[in-house]
Length: 314
Figure 1 (cartoon, rainbow, N blue to C red):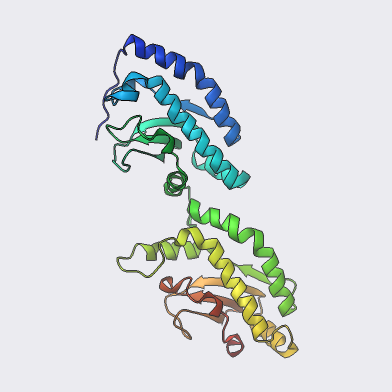
Figure 2: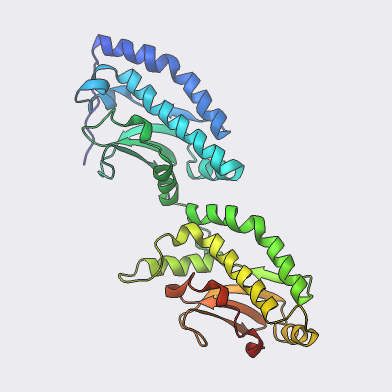
């Protein structure tokens, strides 16, 4: 769908509204936006282009007020995001929206009923559906819409490394990283091995689950990206519980057998094509590494049982 050409000359009353309600307020709104997002941002809108889509009512009669309304609504939603996501979340947003420009454009792909958002060429775009410019302006950057836009934005991938999605990175940051060291220390204490290592293997897990999610028929939960960090943490917590249940914290011989078999001192998570000992998840020693493992279809199922039968694997 090609865009409508900008209107060359706007009515005098409308030009006055744009001057008074948008042009005169733009610098202050840009400053508010920059203060919330902690780096300089600008707003780039073309009233003449937008007016081509103004059919009647608010947008047709008060386009300047309409534009300011969209930007004020976006600022409110971005403040909510900043309060929720913290410094690291803001860094993520500023990296994904690397142009640091907020703009308004038509939803030519017809993804939204009234309004929404996406990220295009590093710009955060407020989108309006054709025929609905000025409708539901406060909702364009609703939380779910903004998070979806951030998650679907292209992320740079290093060579040979899969780039994790925004949703996956956010969950790892919030649900895995703050608790990972305490869990590692707990497992180290149970096994009497202070330098034990936990390898979450996020990139490989993400790549395999992403592939599974594209299958026509799959049992993989639809929200897998949003729980990648928390579920990996739960596998470690399940292992810690199994180690205690199997008395590794009380039996020197069991600990000695563990250290002989897991000679690298590393515990890792991985997804495999086929399980050997269980239908959902299991543990296996391979190459001196203890793996908590499952298949793409059974990821997240019976997490607490992955460490069952560890003694038999040593």
